[in-house]
Length: 95
Image (cartoon, one colour):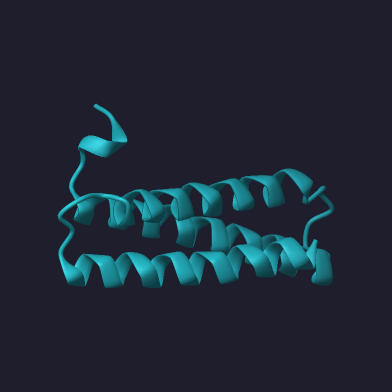
């Protein structure tokens, strides 16, 4: 089944899950960089965090591009795009 075949609600839920997982992994990476809890390279974790945020962002954009979208779903998708964009920009600038 293609991603475009799912409902808007399902896509926004998955966008949220991908985005929040990426943000949590990015925060864990930042905390480990500053406090040195683990002696492990944080590059792969940063990459996974950024990739998950990009997937979440792309799913939110996919929702907003759908036709016949209800105004409340459109607002939710706009908010999700804004939040994930700011989070992605923050983590890119902290690298």
